[in-house]
Image (tube, rainbow, N blue to C red; front, top):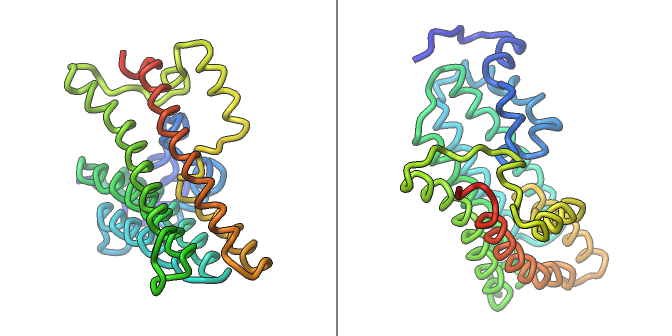
Length: 262
């Protein structure tokens, strides 16, 4: 247990809880964290230090926030879609602060890492399901669009499994944890590496990251309101299917041809 002050300055918090290694991660830090959330999170972390909440308690709040966002997404209209965007911004903030709280108090644990992964996996699988229910017209008319949402959710979870299996494979082979760097993640096959670089200019695969998914859902809700029907949301659902499949196959190919399994 840490003996650090429960009332640190923001500068002290940043120095201890935001080491350079956080920002050097290739995939572990969302662009929103680098751009603005890490500027805000120490203020929330300092407030949390004055409460009985543990780091894992904050992570549970993050999990519930993501589930709530997916539930709100099932409701019709633009206002719920705006709420979804706001909730997922809050989730990112909580995601930053739970780790900062753990570093400051010395309460880092495997359980915290596990809960963090559960929160992200649940949120990013639940969002396409919520979007499918919205495309069906709500809970009173669940049908084929919800089924498509469930199918997309399964593929999203498979993408997550592909990433998690890298760690499992390395541990069971007696290898150290893989470094989260662009060089390690880059495919060793020239053609795939070139494709990967090209896709960074049009990162369609980020449609399944919670924040980006919320922006797409809001854009679709605005389109639906203008058109007076649900066709834009339904078109988004249709587009998500091939995007999910391509992402799954491409992600798997990138893993097996990179240095992550060597």
